[in-house]
Image (tube, rainbow, N blue to C red; front, side, top):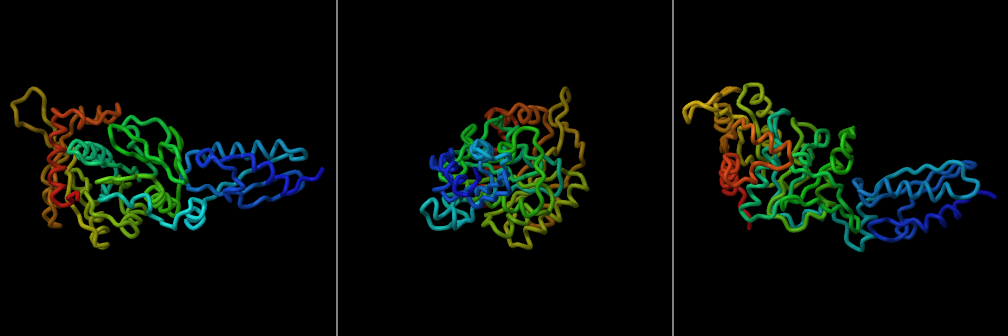
Length: 352
């Protein structure tokens, strides 16, 4: 009995997309069937590159094909539909950025170098805006070091619906991160083009819904992700995170230069790990471990506001490690600091 393409397609008519509830053949997801003797290779086009059900779809296809008589080996290649194919499938006009059509303000959180606490600032600022009554989302665009799920205590994976990824909701925030798709401990080894594509997917093909603010936690430096945001996404502005020491400030200048060159507003500077309040000493006495005045200098040099100084605080670190941002504690110093930063931000990015 010979294996034929028709027989392969017949068994794949029984394999359904878990989100769309229809078979892969009628959905147009089966792009190619190659047969070499008793070995079969099937190419499946997912509705989105970050499809949370991709492993299940792949396993279901492989199992269905292997169960055919005279098939000794079955392999599945996953690719992604074009925006036009996706639009035809969902009965809508093509729109690369349909996911953010109801988002009022997109603000990037950037830094010149790693280790300055950019993700900490993103999470606590998001909570501060949320407490002021705004609808807030967080996109973790740091593809190679996605820490947002840890800081928010997220361990579940997102679901898909009609070709769109649904954000995970935590503390009232809508959140998307590569870490929730890849799984804990799985290395994300992506080159530039894939990083660019993923960021566009996470903006355009995630069901963000109505948001006042979407905060995008960028990877450090001036690489592919910041360039993609600067060139292809309609950013309202950028917040730059730094620490006071000289080496951090040198990198901040390069980071600011990237966004200034693209004519994107810099809403201000947040100086993180600014100082340490020493326990058991007179109130007001602080220890400036990483130096002082760096945030003010860089803000003055570029003519942008210093939004705030965040202290080096053990409770902020513990809150991030435990998945409960300290800004949730209304009476904490951290909460008060980020409330002030949020108030200053609102002067430059008012929600309609």
